[in-house]
Image 1 (tube, rainbow, N blue to C red):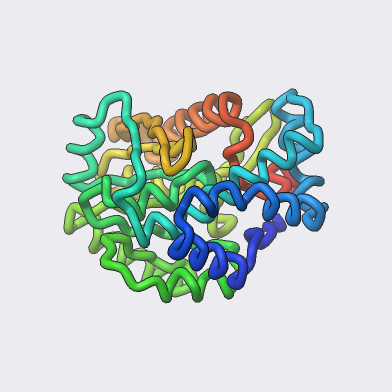
Image 2: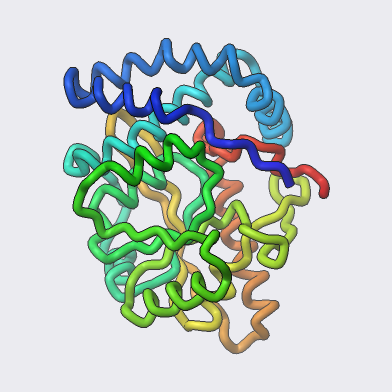
Length: 286
């Protein structure tokens, strides 16, 4: 399945962070309107796959819809970096925080999606436990270098899937034994073995069953988080808790848990369609 590189570039993000430091976040926020228009003109491949996405949603796709989708992506991308520099400027509202806070503090599998401000949420410090993000991100090299060079004290650790299965498995096991949080993307599998087909927006698509397999084997609870942009440096968090049914076989328990995740993802993208940022044909046949 072809996956496109993340939009943007190292120099554009570096310029954005310079403007953020000199002129403040609000100036940068409104500057994203013309910057978005630049990418609106130069990203025809993204427009093509978003047409498929909105068609599967049963929603009208227009230039206005396309532009707004890109603009929200730009905001969330900037927040990914700005939240590292100034995490206290961000707010994350929960309908009810006590239960997930307790689960996060005792260690769990936290399932994110390429949706909204997932990265800003990890950087914000509102999750007090150490966060280990398992990822192999399709990000441009210049942006990766820039992120690594932002020197801040952080409880976020990246477990790089490029290090190989054995190394990754050991790091995940160590993190969970230390009652830390292990974060995995549910809407993008790193390899074919981790993929499982589910119905999503009335079509079959591949999802990542790996976080639920880990939860089953380790008896750790699963939290599914969606970080929804609601305003300037403001997000709300919708979540569900999934407990793996150990009385069932692993295959059945994982399938049922994955279905709960996919159903929640579908519910959320129908409510906030322009905050899902998988910019490739998610339903492409292999």
